Image (tube, rainbow, N blue to C red; front, side, top):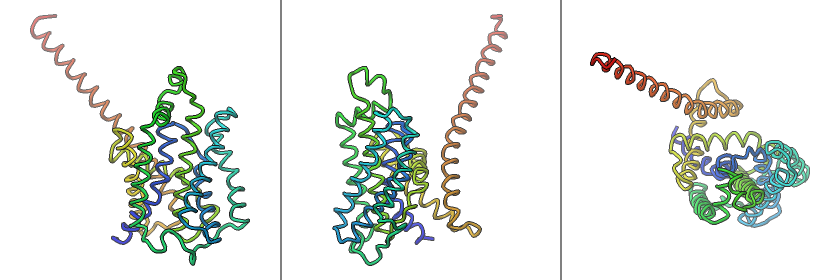
Length: 305
């Protein structure tokens, strides 16, 4: 059991970069970006093909990040300049990336990296990944404090108001979606190096995993400000992996059930806060009704009526 939880923490750190990317589009920009499923595999594909050709794994990871930026840029341009619905833009780019990823993988559905030199060849993931995640968190929060970062956050809150101040919301959306997919692709590259292979279908369902991490993190650890929320998202990714690890230890569940487990986790994480708010509202309404009834009774007894 302890070994499973240890592995879950390790996986959570690897997937947390992807969750941070989803947080940018889902929470900050309020943009339903499905490019994630494609750009995650893009990062893995770039990582696998370049490492198999002897490139430095750190350079490879940065290149994968650039590949994700390019994918996000295309989605952003389709939405802002092509005037295509945001959801449809992501779907179109996700479909296009399948063919692009096959090209990157040179027509092969997967590439193994078992005997290749990766970031994790000489350093264990549990040593390097906390450092990588901390660096990404620091850079991300510094960026969010810049003028561009503030404009990005404001665009998600109220795009019309920001446009009235003369800001170009199209550019901020493109930057946000690009940065999001860059982080997603970086996560895909690191996971490909850690697992020892890249597969054309490795990105399927990643948007749901990212949403689960964001929602769980905010529900458990809160979301007071950007710094606090980004840390919550990272912790949410770890908690999500722990929940999955525990669920898969149930005898009648198989690894093939991972997708439905993920879907159920997201459903529960979305429904519970709504149920909690509904219960609180009903209690508050009942309390106010009782107070009003008591006041009316007091006035009646006192002869005010």
